[in-house]
Image (cartoon, rainbow, N blue to C red):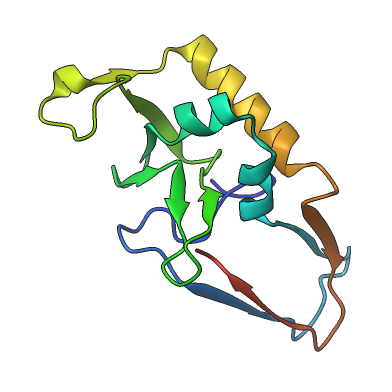
Length: 149
């Protein structure tokens, strides 16, 4: 499921939502909050080596089987951003170095469990950095729109 894991809304869909709106009619009795992250700034923070490797990876949604690149370019700004749903990633595939276009499954290799765990931990550390993230505690009447791309 979603919940406390870092995720992009709609990652189970082939064409993800471009924007997401939150209109808080009533705050839950125990309060409510969401942490948002600037995934473009997070990508910029990666080392050149990490950027190169992450750009060769795709994640497979465990519920729908939909595949998304771990790094994508914003359709308007062209800025590169990280993109991974920790709660619904069933596998991560990596294009072998030097391959420009996948022609067969031999051009890909699945990450093993230890690599997946290391990747998820790195992703969490990256997005939890307060330089890129914002904790928002909801108040009645809040209206928030985010760029989900």
